[in-house]
Amino acid sequence: PKSWFAHFYIVAAVWNAMWLAISWRAYFCSGSGIRDETMRGHLRHCILGLLCLQIHELRRVFENQFVHVHSKEAKMPLGGYIGGLAYYIFLPTMLIDASVAVEAVAAALDLAGRVQCIPVPEALTLLVAENGGFLPREHLA
Image (cartoon, rainbow, N blue to C red; front, side, top):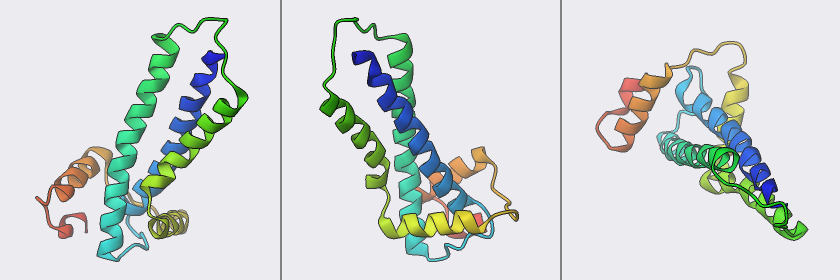
């Protein structure tokens, strides 16, 4: 049934949140192994893209649960269902450069117990300001 569209958005929101958390942790937590400025720049852009995608996916979950009224007769082909799930699973990975993803996962795993992260409001401000070219990199040190 068409009400299964909710599966797409819930899977997408959870999967994207995982990638966002890994990227966020690799970028904003002290002790991160990512020191190359070019790599950090790519990661910063990935985080912004993933944040936008997360907002979109959460909005779609909300719409599907509280706005759309799906008829009981409406059907969805199995191929369309599988294709939709595949699309939403691979969508975040299209925003992340493969080398950045490997480095981010390695850095996030390497941070195990010795994590000290920048608070979220300050991190968001720095992320936006750095992408706008307003702040030098030294403000994150």
